[in-house]
Structure formats: structure tokens, C-alpha cells
Image (cartoon, rainbow, N blue to C red; front, side, top):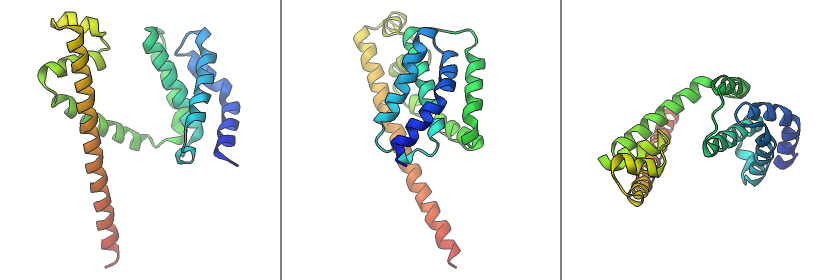
Length: 189
């Protein structure tokens, strides 16, 4: 069975439960659009065979699309926390929770280090935008900067943090590879 056929079957089988999950995050008139957009996004993926848990991946895609919509629309539902916990329960069947938490904590600490290394003004702007969700206009007013300066600081922060994270990932990959070689080399003795 091709990966496209597998994803299509999983989509059809999971469509109602994806709708329920999405309904807890977005308004009722947006549910169907997000469910359909989930399938469109899945179809656009080139290397589907690299996805180890298609159903979990589909739920995460739907959740991310719903959260993106919510963020763009500025919609806040009162019981969002409970609903996201329900979604996590659905997804937890295919995930090693301890491993995922370790990865998230590790990545978060690297990200914090990347932000800490930004120049002071750039860091203030970046944190206000990415952590607190302020608009460029709000940041400009709060810090007494022009909107174009705020935009440049955000772009600089994104670029530097991305480069930092890429370098960390490269270092960790090399470290992981050398550890694997050491372990493999030690077993032949």
C-alpha cells in the first residue's frame, strides 16, 4: 500500500475525531476548513515514509493549524487548556512521553541560550514579539522605536536564533555520531 493511500485511509477513519479535537480550539464555522487543510498539508509532504506515526502526525497537524488560526484571529476559548490535554491523551499512544519531554526541555534550553545571546535591544523586541505576542506597533510604542526598527530587530533575532539552533543541532549530531562509534568500537574488544 502506498503512503498516500495509507494517509488517505487514516484521514477518512480519523476525520470525525480530528473535527472534535479542532472544535475545542476554533469556532464551529472554521472546523471543516481546518480539517480539510490538514489533509491538504498531509498530501503536500514529499517524504511520507519518514513519518513513523501517521495518525499522530495528522492530529498534530490539525492541532497546529487550529492553533495558528486561533493566533491569527485572536480567538481565545475559555476551556482551551482542558481540550489540549484531551488532544495530548489521544496523541500519547504513539509517543514516548519521557523522551519527548527531554527533547523539548533540551531544545527549549538551547533556544533560551540563543535568545540570551542576542543584543539587548534586539532581545527585548524579540521576546515581546515571540513570547508575549505583542504586535510590532505595540512594541514600537512601548520601547520608543520605529516600527521598521522593530521589524529589523525581529528579523535579526529570528536569523540569529535559527543559526544558533542549527549549529547546536550540528554539534549534537556530531557528538551523537561519535558516541555511537565509541560504543560500537567498544563492543568489538
